[in-house]
Image 1 (cartoon, rainbow, N blue to C red):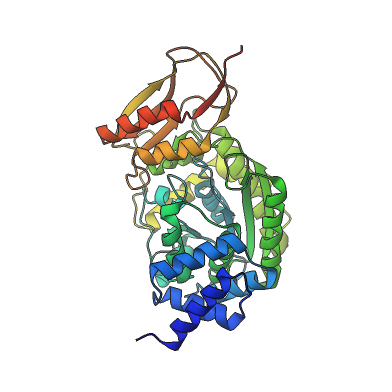
Image 2: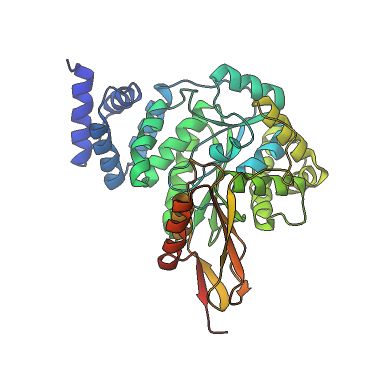
Length: 420
């Protein structure tokens, strides 16, 4: 038998489809019904489609965020609680796993609740799971953060904003997210985690989730508006992004890049290091200001990384999350066989097609196969010659390799200028 609350939720979805505004009571009931799985996937899909098409006004954004928080569990931390979030869309830029140990080593709590992959071949939780467990109860997560200062976990068992996980499950097969849905999703989880200071990374570019700067500014404004309403300081950074900051695409390959930066190896991806330091610096400046500590975020972040403190802290977090602290990029086993891709042209790389890169890495098996993916041997500005290695494909499945190699001809990763 259908309850009144279910009937009301269906009516709310109908209103959404017609472009009508919902009251807080209607929104709360809708989130409650979704979080308790009282609505079918079909009805929930209609809601996702309606929100993608219509978007939300400021009041609705606030109400949806509030309702998503109040229909789930909350984490309880005192004092300054830092966090960083990227709206995603670009592979191979696992800066979070570098920022968390830097901020924790600086003495601030940073309970990072990360997502699994939605539109890319790896989410932060997928990459972290290569080293340690990422699923914990609220009590376990609080113990981890209170002991080592930070964590990199998945929301799976936490029950934070449970409606969001169901909506993500609906969105995943069609690989899209609305901007407003991203805003609600991110902010609900930050509020539920007691976040007081948030730095937001908004990558823009022709193959990013957000293409134009004017759209990024609108998104940043909405994040900051919600931050004020919930008493959270939010600084949004808009970063023009043309290619991954790292070399690896896929959970294990991206995790290896993270270790190389933390270990400060000679072959580490410098772009990934620079991006992590930039965002960590902003976040530390916010925290130092709040704590009335006269220190410079960039100087402290760089010292923590170069001294090995960040690596030490990362290993502490890995151990606290049930992994082995004896990890190294040099001894890390990639499990899958490497297949070298050679150039059939001469020129220099003027662009990277991130859409094609994501599609090919997923075709190879990522993120379900954590060791599948791609390593870029050539990036923007590099010259290439005929027969030169330009990428490495990793997969355990010969059929998937054949499919990816043949698809590469139609959907190239590297955009070349052959007039040299």
